[in-house]
Length: 218
Ligand SMILES: Cc1ncsc1CCOP(=O)(O)O
Ligand SMILES: C=C1C=NC(C)=NC1=N
Ligand SMILES: [Mg+2]
Image (tube, rainbow, N blue to C red; front, side, top):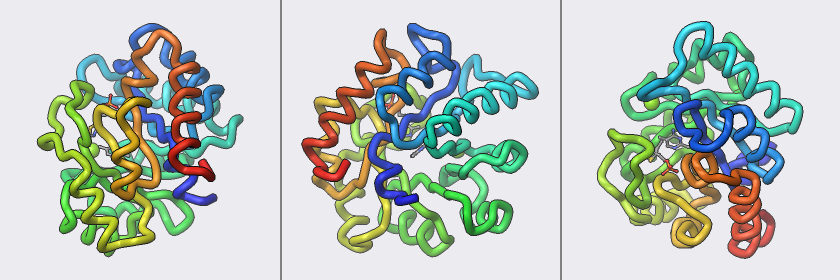
């Protein structure tokens, strides 16, 4: 699969991000709306744990599999291996990407969060398949984010790594994500603009159509 195309509309969700609908219904609507990749990110207040978390992951994975949407697990490498996920996303304070690669093997997708050119360099050298950079704008979805970064770090990494897959994240909406693409991101990662709105399918369709205007092959 073409990782840059998979990064176009990269939906991230946990059960506690869902405002108006049951989590699986939100995911179904997002898939129907045209998301290109999904990240299972079950963490924070009220997140499921243990068997309930595992079962929720399996249910989400089944929906993604049926729609050929790549399924990525946030942080939890063991869960990813146990259910046969398509990959893992780790932050700077999680397992090193090199170790994740040893555990997952070459044919899985490994994403790493990066906030600086230095962190991008390290992630690329460690064998990451993409980097997630932000927060581009303020967000209340993740409470311990780094300071709002704008698009400077994306631009800097893009200048040093003209072809490496980058996805932007943080406070992104249909009416504000274009600068991140213009700075060099290949796609956008979204939580609340899809998960916590009354009509997730419509919100996703709007993101997809806007992305098509910005990237003509989207
Ligand atoms: C996981 C994460 N990492 C940086 S910002 C963020 C939260 C993004 O959520 P939203 O799309 O609702 O701003
Ligand atoms: C923090 C993150 C940054 N980027 C991506 C793609 N996912 C995350 N969970
Ligand atoms: Mg993490």
